[in-house]
Length: 312
Image (cartoon, rainbow, N blue to C red; front, side, top):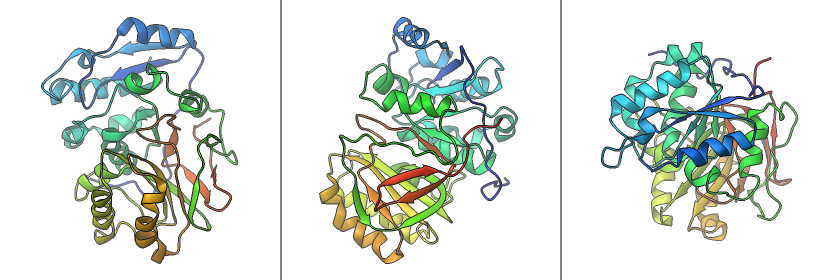
């Protein structure tokens, strides 16, 4: 299978007026109030199409692998769908990796939005289809859960094409950031859920980190397990050649508790490290465009886009 990680990033189209969101469940199962979901989109001038697998459950999975993969492919192929929003994370995305039709995705580039377990899909699609992905709010816990701004506003601003080259991805002022290692660097923003980055090493979804700004976040992982995961990335050579690190939310672990480990792991690399970024399993949950070229200034605590996110 060919890799496209060194090629120009494939850009989707920005959301048009009355855009249609496909709702899919490629990972864990959850109950969805379809009427509430439809009203949420209608209130914002959008439409939604809820795919069949959303209503399925097979143990801890949202239906069979075949159904979940069928829904994902159908959402990419449907010309009426403008963006694909995952209902939730959990587990199950990895089980779809060897069935993904990357040529189908390349022919129909659309924003795929999610985080947590969806990291497996993001990294695989970025590597093998070259398509930019959006580490952002999912339907159940985030959007229907009424999380604080800019959870929704950052997602809509990016998907709507309101942010482009030279624009800063604004972080909420009520949540202070911490400069762990000072500096300025630029590169492709990659990464996502740290546990998934470790789990997908050696697979077709292995994250490509050379020349990148590495973003990491996680939940329900004690400090020693975060240490183990970061050490796994280091021993796998995934920290060699990175240009900077953006540390998202690690639910249950404060930045003060993380700091010694971050200094120990990333300090010798001499790259800027900024921590406390509110993206991941947190409230608010700021959207990040994975695959986009960005500039990270850890002293100024700024993340700036170096490219447009959508094709003309």
